[in-house]
Amino acid sequence: MTSTTTAPRSATGSVALRGVTKVYGHGDQAVLALDEVSLDVEPGEFVCLVGASGCGKSTLLNLVAGLDGVSGGRIELGHGVNPGLMFQESALFPWLTVEANVEVPLRLRRLPRAERRAKVAELLRTVHLADFGRKRPHQLSGGMRQRVALARTLALDTPVLLMDEPFGALDAMTRDILHDELERIWSERKLTVLFVTHNVREAARLADRIILLSSRPGRIIWSTRVDVPRPRRIDSPEVATIAAEVTDRLRTEVGRHGQ
Ligand code: ADP
Ligand code: MG
Image 1 (cartoon, rainbow, N blue to C red):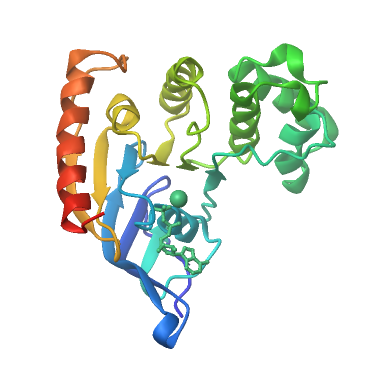
Image 2 (image 1 turned 180 degrees about the horizontal axis):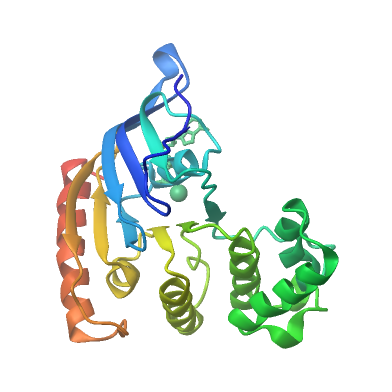
């Protein structure tokens, strides 16, 4: 099994997949989750991955995050880059305050106490939760918990953000606000974002480029650049046109599998 490699020649913030294959299990039980997926994400690019449930989107993010090893091919990140990963559930520590949750990566990075305090305050301001530092996760709404999770991921100070349906459990209004916030933070910090969603409108709202994965095995079957000027609105005709095109492609793909 080849593991995730960090190639010194890759630019900071770039993500490259070279013929990445992932097989789960062995023998009769083997599942080919990803089949020779190749993809180049530019530093600062916002890429959305869409595809039917079970097509390997989470697998791909987990491999880039280094949570699991590839079965074939390789993944190249900038030298020393450890991507941050966010999920649909905020995965906050329930017994810690908001501040303490955001502080965890800073402790792991061994930042001195005063610096940690200043950084936590700055990050909470960034996600518009400056007044909620002393609350605990259960005292917050789902949208606020995802803001905390985002602040905690930003505390890693990594140029690469991996997001696995991070707003999938939120209502449309909250999601809309978080799209604006994420777009602002992405552009201010010049982050590279690899964002998984099965919501085509969300993809068209956020992405520089949308990539469509086929189902079992997961392969890249289509991609498109989204040249709609920013800031965008999810209900704008331009975004709707792109979303309709992606939906058509998805329908064709799902239909091909008789699901
Ligand atoms: P998606 O995120 O697109 O819904 P996943 O990446 O979670 O898809 O899963 C891709 C395929 O790999 C699915 O068929 C799933 O059942 C299988 N799979 C995912 N994780 C594992 C695992 N740990 N062991 C075995 N099979 C898995
Ligand atoms: Mg998934």
